[in-house]
Length: 142
Image (cartoon, rainbow, N blue to C red; front, side, top):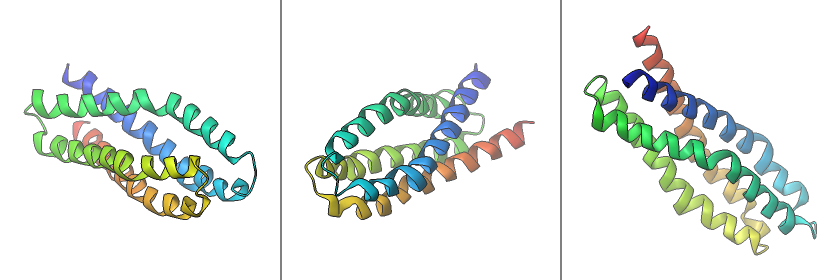
């Protein structure tokens, strides 16, 4: 059981790391290119809906499996606790920082696009750290 939970956790972490790098390097900077457009709100709403379809399930699986790894298994408890801490920080950043900025963008506060890009580095770095931790776990298990 430990192996399957760990695999699900690692898979979702690596998936989300790829998504966040795409968002950080392509999607969010692209907001600047259309911010003066009258279609920005429609595009932003499209972005929020579509990105939600992609990230909600993996984020939930990552959180649940991270909790399960810490609560249910003694093996690698410290590493899994660090991983859970990273995931919790990602969720806090998402709901305390990025979500409120997205809400201002939806209302037309285009000046907040650079703030969104800058603060999103928090999640990009945290998910990258979680991916490195995942690779380390794979390395010590093989």
